[in-house]
Image (cartoon, rainbow, N blue to C red):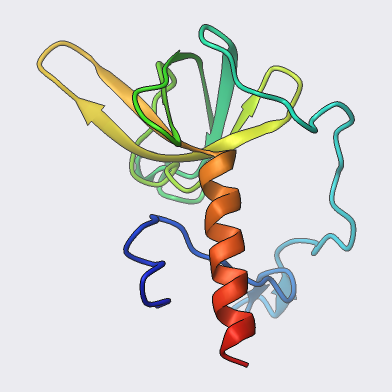
Length: 144
């Protein structure tokens, strides 16, 4: 918990050391990538109203182990740092990845806003994620 920061964001950092090791089978269940893909053209890529997006995650509906992908569009920018989408966001794919049609990350799916007619997913924008990263880094550096 980072005082003054954790309360403002629904985000966390994870450090991955290696692939998952299945102790029952005594084997690794995946390959830990040493290099991650970089997409050209993602710098200064601002989301647009009506833009197609795709959300990746592991919702509880799939048992939490199977990747699911949902498609939608950017429906609204209701307030600073939030993006509403028609793509389904549920328990498990929140915290996943939201990308545009070019594979560029636009944010992290966070929650579902429901009303009596329809539900829209809420994505934390890259601006919010970058603000969190900056504040968390500053806090960690000042407490070394």
